[in-house]
Length: 331
Image (cartoon, rainbow, N blue to C red; front, side):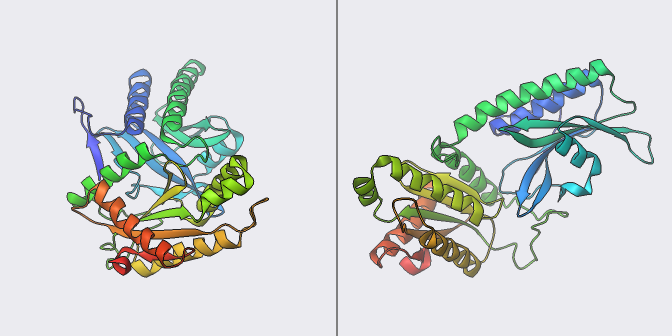
């Protein structure tokens, strides 16, 4: 659900990331005297970059995307906004006059982890002065610094995938929204589903490296860690940009997939399994994975969701490893 926050509303149910974005747009609004600010996240989608609006300040209040599993209000190719494209590729603030109403649109890039990760859009009836731009960039710099701390706390240090703590929070939020039946399709989303697909569930897949202990014993922990890192890279290349990828402690990886039919999920997971088996891992050679997957439905808990996928994983192991198994098959 996209929540509209009115002045004075409580914020206990928002994630740290959402609270940080709300703080940024609120600070910019009070400093610059504008009621039109938005934050667009840059998301890779194949060979393209997408702009996905995550937070927006308007005269009606502040709206923000409440969970990463819901579609954004606005999602469009970067090239559809020439001023934002210029800001991203030139890595500097850009301003253009908006046709029709005489307002000026300012785009301030957010550099993070060696790349531009987001763009802050500020709309004013005049061009920002040098002093105002310095203030805006100062707030964006603070946002970037806190974002770096959040990223560090949310991710596994070896692979860079999201960690168990983040999994518990994000899947808990997803289940809360499913329970409230609060995920409508959003016009303008590049992944908008047909009416018969909206009812398709989200999915969880637990991925386990087969005979990983043997890899460590034969080749050492250094090569074992390299296997885990390369596997994480293969996951990033194999799943959709809005699917969420996690590493738990040890050799267990988890993917949370957005709404899809079971057969489609099985094809994606089997294609990933085949890709891992065909990948040459340095010094180690062939590595295989077993995968168990299960739907995520209203009424589930984080614990029961994991238990269902783990049961399917156990069956895949019993069937000979290097296989996928759905919870319905295991049951």
